[in-house]
Image (cartoon, rainbow, N blue to C red):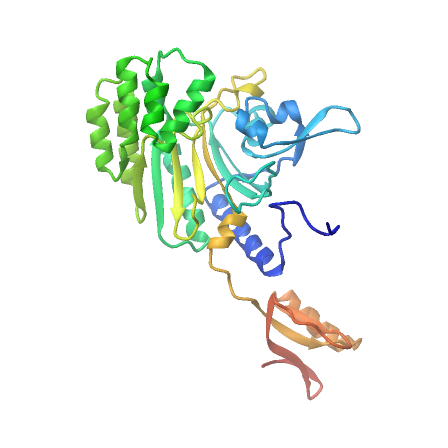
Length: 386
C-alpha cells in the first residue's frame, strides 16, 4: 500500500472544492449571525467521560478513542458538536435566559453515516437554549431554510414529525431497552410484520396505535387521519396541533409528515424535522427539540434547559450546491521595481486578487480567472482587460 493513500472515507479537499466549502461556511455563519446567534468553537478533542456524558450508544460507537499521553486519561475525538455546545451553555455560560449559539467545525466518525459519505464532516449547526415554546422551534426551522437558501439551494422539502407521539403510545409499556430500540427501528423502516412480532405482548391500544403510525405519512391530510386514529391516546392531540401550526408558518417549501419516523428517539424530546433538496439523496439538514440535553453538565444552577437546533454537513452541502465561478483576478509581471510593487499593493488593498507571474514557466491556476493584466503605459501602471 502506498504511504500517501488516505484511510477509507477520508479525503483531501482540493482548491476548487475548498473554496466552495469556505464560501458556504461563511454564508451559513453570516446567516446565523443575522438571527442573533453567537459563534462558539469547542475543541476537537475532550476527555471521553465529558464528551460522552449523557450521549447515546450510537454516538459512543461513532467516537474515536485514544489515551492522553500527558494525563493517561481516555480522550475522544468529537463525532458530534451538540453535546459540547450543551456543555458550554450549561457549565461555562450559565445564563438563565435564552441563549443562541452556532458553530462550524470538523467532526470525525468511526464509520460513514451512509454510502459514499465522508468520515470527516464539516458540521455546521445552530441551537437555542432556554426556550421551550413553539416559537423557538419555528425560528430554528426558518434559520435552517434560510441557510440553505443562502447556499443557493432551489426547491426544498421539509418532513415533520414529533418524538412525543411514539412515546405516548409506549407510555406504561414495560419493555427492555433492546426491544424498545427494535420497535423504533421497525417504525422508521415501516416494517409492519416485524413491529407486530415485537409488540405482540403490548397492551392492545399501544399495539394498534403503533401499527397505525406506519401508514401516517404524506401531506397535511395525515394530521387529520392521526387526530382521528389517535384520539384516545393522551397527549397526542396537542402535539398534532403544534405540528399543524408549525407547518402553517412555513412558506415556499414542500411540507410532508412521517409520524412513524422514530430515528433519534432516545435523543429528541419533541418536534423533529429533516430538509431535503433535489440531488442530495438523503436529508441535507436534520434537527429538532432535545430538552434537558445540558442537565448532565449542570452545577449549582438548574441546567435542565430546553433546547432546539439543527446541524448539517457543509461538505455534503457543497456537493449539491452550485459551484461559484472562479474569482476574477489581475495578472501582473514579477519585478523588484518599487512602482510596480506599489501598484500591486494598491490593487490588493482594494480587494483585488493579483497573481504575479514568476520567472520561468507558470502553471495553470484553477481558482482564479485572470481576466485583466497590469501593464506599464507611459510610465504608469494600469489595468487592462484581456
